[in-house]
Length: 207
Ligand SMILES: C[S@@+](CC[C@H](N)C(=O)[O-])C[C@H]1O[C@@H](n2cnc3c(N)ncnc32)[C@H](O)[C@@H]1O
Image (cartoon, rainbow, N blue to C red; front, side, top):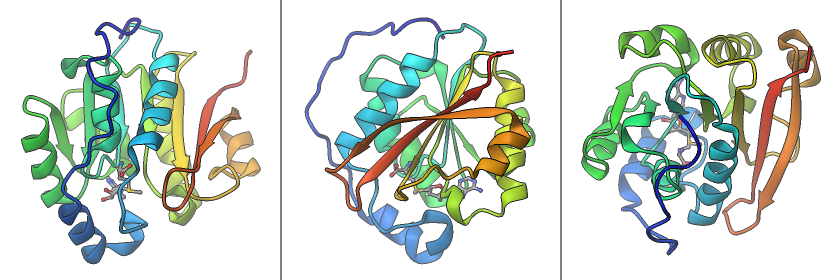
């Protein structure tokens, strides 16, 4: 993806039907993490960070754990072309909701923690930036490291993972950062989210 290609058409908050997300949380509370989707303000912060990082032309933006699509909506609204966005979500009802909400969007139903295999099944072999909404604080460290490792293998050297979290600290612990040779930068915190949302950017250390 190159620089932002579409002008911003609307910057008003958009509220999607909360029930599919709530049902998803009832089915799988640990994997979904919280019964409320990200707020419009958080989604704008996350999407803007992702599109700032999406400088290369070597593949689409990939969103992991798209839920019912607040961040997807913000990515599209802030200029990511529909054909340059791929989302991965494991909950079948949420995948159906995403397909209806964003006609034409590539929605891959599958396990984002097995990222390379899941993207390969959808024909995606390279990406330019990864937006991660998976609740990494409750994911076993080996699975989180594998997921991030795959994400960085698929991206160019200057690629980044934009991760959001309800925690105060980076969801990737210092040991995992060192093992993956990554640096973490704090993007910001959005207080208009229940609970407040922190956004982190992970990128490779300069050689
Ligand atoms: C914290 S919610 C974020 C949802 C949405 N992106 C938002 O900001 O409101 C986490 C999402 O990740 C999905 N998820 C959790 N584990 C997953 C996995 N291993 N593979 C794919 N999706 C997963 C959940 O179903 C849920 O929709």
